[in-house]
Length: 161
Image 1 (cartoon, one colour):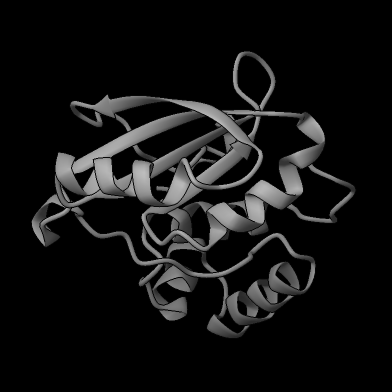
Image 2: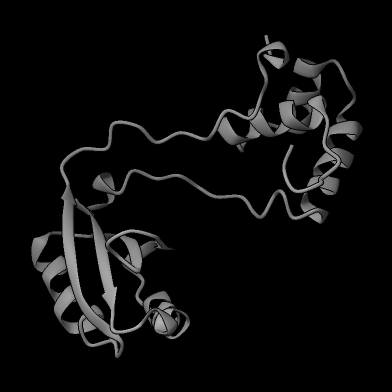
C-alpha cells in the first residue's frame, strides 16, 4: 500500500477515524481500537514523520460565513512550461483554495470561493486574468456540493465497530 510506507492495519484505522473527525482525542481512539493512548500518540508521530499526515484542517461551511459562490476554473496556459510560474502567482490569490496541474483540456484546474458573483468577477478580471502566461480561463459555478468526504483507506476486514 502507498509509496513503500510501513503502515499497518492499526495505522490505517487511526487515520480513518481522524479523517472523519480530527478532533477526536487520542484516548477515545485508543478505546475504540483497544490499545493505549500512548500507542496512538507514537503511531501518529510516525505517520507525521513519514509525511503521510501533512497537517490538520478545520472544515467550515463557507455559505454560513457569507461566501456563497464556489466555482471551478479551467486555466489554459500559453505554454505548459509556465506552470510553476503561474502556480506561484495563483497561490497569492486567497480566493483560490485548490489548484491542480492536469491532463486534458486545461493545464490547471482550480477551485475558487467568493462572496458572490461580483466578487468572483473581480477576482477573475483583476487578479487571475492579469497573470502572465494565462491564455484564457473557463469558469464553472457549482450549484451544490453533494459529496465531500475523505477516501476510505480501510480494507473490508479492517472496519471499526
